[in-house]
Length: 489
Ligand code: MV4
Image (cartoon, rainbow, N blue to C red):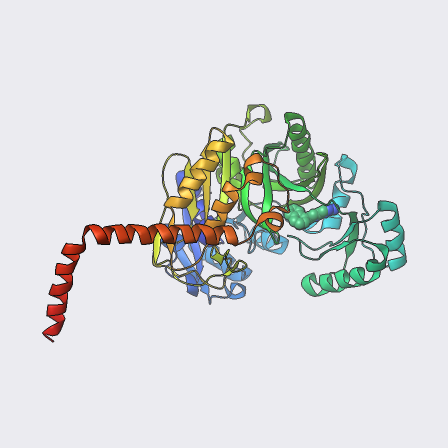
């Protein structure tokens, strides 16, 4: 592979290009009309305009992306995350065009894209799963029978769903018929597939996922876990590795289960196996994401493995040079996603320009971003500006470095989730490690951030007043000069 086209934008496009360049591989960026001046376009060796701003006419336009690869002579396509990254048809088209798709085969993407197909694929591998059914259900009478057997609360899930879409919690028998009807119609309108199934609802789980890596020669390994429980409405905000709750035994068992899931679908490349962990520390397989994930840097920091480099190597057909026994966890990493969203206003998108944009630096700070000062955050795409990642010998150190980095990170012109990150890193439940997927719902109110703001405003006022009192006489002179000057008009 001599030249890779990156079918993505923003921080992940830059992230992939950095590893490609390190490996001596040329890079091709693609971009939309909204991204003419984007950082990923400037960084790449070559760039091809795809079309108008809407994703459907640019980053999701399969034929245009493949044409861009052909016209530039790119022999590999890296899809990043989102956009076309988990589109089996795209992976197929890329391969048919004689270009290497840097990701798993279409079969694995397809199987794991359907929760029911995924359950079926792993059936013979003794993977722990939440009590429930493994077929689509439409009959309410049958659903009631199953619910009775499993016990309430239950969760109705859409097979084609993902990221929490198409899920309904049902507390009792009376609610069941209506909720089931809703779940089915929601699934039809959102995914064009009304297949739903039922699981026991795990009420306060932690969301823990395992990074896997596989080559074409049957070697599959895991790179430990990421804890992703701090999320709001299924959007992760803070992730970390390792998780504070896993014992070496559970870690090993989850890792081995994840490897089996990957083998069950002949996985090749970097992938992530998602689990729920209940309050008794039982873990259950949920789904597999067949892409490089947003939060992959925390795994890179604790293992020292460049995951993009590994993706490229296995896509070239190389054998994995890493052995499971050689992998160890060193230190602790945290990631905060910086979104252009206002934590004081229900996390609504905050549109605007990066009037001031000063990056934090220093030991243990990694910033994966895709913008520069003066740039506007386009409204057409995901509002994530950057990922602030910190690394320390211990979790406490990683948290301290994160707090300092948040302080040093100066973003003006729009609201971001930076103050929310500070809130999390200062919260007792987060510091102690005693939290689950309900962290934000249970603890977050904008009041704490407002208080911080008020304190900062008060300090600023005091500093200004002190300065004024100390320099009163000089300031008077300036004033009089200025007023004289203006009087001359
Ligand atoms: C669950 C669950 C509880 N019980 N399944 C949400 C996203 C999708 N990947 C699966 N999800 C869940 N499945 C059972 N049987 C709770 C969630 C869930 C969740 C999972 C991970 C991270 C955050 C979450 C927030 C709410 C619900």
